[in-house]
Structures are given as C-alpha cells and as structure tokens.
Length: 322
Image 1 (cartoon, rainbow, N blue to C red):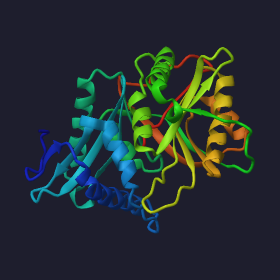
Image 2 (cartoon, one colour):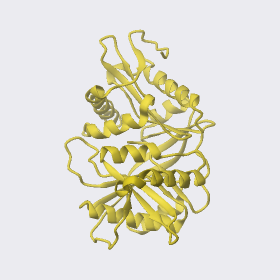
Image 3 (tube, one colour):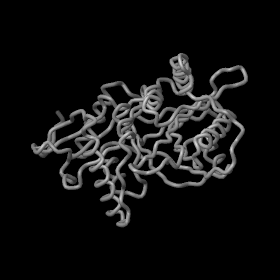
Image 4 (cartoon, rainbow, N blue to C red):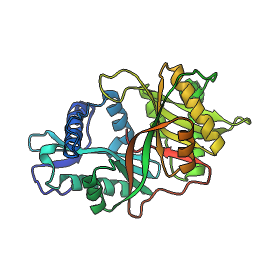
C-alpha cells in the first residue's frame, strides 16, 4: 500500500470491469476540469467507449491501479502498461475534489516503483503540451520533456486496389504471425514487444493488425489499428493507427498505403496516425502526402529511462495513450 497524506484513501488496488463506469466518470470530470482551468470552459470530455476501457485494463493487467476513499468510491487511477521493456502510464487522473492533497504524486510514484520492479528500460507518459501545470508536476517527479506525438489525420476519397493482410485472418497461423511481429520489433528495438496489444485488439474485435511483407515473403512491417469509436455513443468514423513498426522508409510508406486501404475496406473515410516526431523524415513525408496536424501531446520520460535509439531509416511508433 502506497503512503498517502490522506489516511482515508486506500490503494493501489486492481480494478474490475465493474469499475469502468466510475473510471469513466473520473476521466470525464478530471479532464473537463483541466480544460476549464486552461481557459477552454466550453470543452466537455465525453466518456470513453467501455470496450476501449476493457482493452486498456486487459492490456495493463496487474498494472491497472485505482485508489478509493473512505466510502469505497474511486478517487484516482493510474493505468500502467508494459510492452516488453517499454513501460508507460496512461490514462491517469485524480477526482477533482481530491486534487492538491498529494494523491497524484503518490499514484505516479507507485507507478514508477511498479515499472522499475519489472526491469523496464523506458518509463514514459504523454500530457498536453499547453498545460504547464502538468509539465511542472511531472518534472518535479523526475520526468523530462521529449518530442511530441502529433496526431495526423487525412480524409480518404479513393479506394486503393489493395487487399491488406491482417492478423484476424491468420487462423491457425496466428501464433506464427505474432511471433514474426515480436521478432521484427526486437531486431529494431531490442526488448520491446507489442504482442499483448496486438492480441487484445484482435480478441476484443476493436481493430486489427496489418502485416506487410517484402518480395521474399518476410515481414517488413506491421501496424496495429483500432476502428472502434473512442468515445461512448459515437459512430465508427476513423481508423486510428496506434503502433507501427517498419524496417525502412520504403516499408513505412507502403504500410501507410496499406492502412489507408484497410480504412476504406472498413467503410471508414478518415485515418488518424499517432506520429512521434522523433522520426522526422516519416513525419515530413506524411505532411507531403496530405496529412494534417490535428492534436499534439508532449512525450515525457523519467530521468534515466529514456526511449532507445532506433536504427536509421526504421520507424517504431508506440502510442502512449489508449
């Protein structure tokens, strides 16, 4: 049990699926309050799609942490994720009436301790770059500002004559396909492993994984995407690429074309890419292709736990939001 200034608060505990509704309530209230304090009083953050919450909790496993007050009501949460030796936090929030009393710092420290105990190489999170209070808060806990994650979007009008290979159609070969994805990622960023995210996405049917091969039939790249609506009650309106691994620039560009084909095949006319600007050439190429900036998040990593260097020409995007 983490030490807390308020002895009425207990935690961390692992949430269950029954906690999705209170998690959603705190998520909406805390981020709406954050926008209000940033001067955007007209913004109301909607509840997340419950299936997206289920994905986040299943991916996190024991890393999903909640804190409760004396009435056993949720008052804060920190959802921790492990992608092999890559560890990150998100989403995390404190109920507005419990902010300013030290709960947030205790939640972050508990998350850092949990990730360190599992031998991670990277510990990171993403926050809104305009929110200087958040940047200062995380900096006091040892996090350093890094590059941006820019959400790039493009509206699609033409249907490419492509038939993408996806993980969901692998049948008995699924384990082999997952192993190939893991091996490619490990060659580019040793120790990083997106298998759990790929499997959970397929099992929950909220998206799929595109597989790209070279002329010899070897895996040259893959991209994890979701098509399930992010917000509760919204229609399916975009394909969101969350993880992308390409061994070189040519494979990256082919993979983007494959993702666009997958979107149109699902009758989705908009594609959204979570692009880390550390991969400058990939970012510029997407802008040249007609993608436009839609949103930005500041990537921060704990001092001594930065992201590893990726070989020149390769692209490894790892989204740190759900």
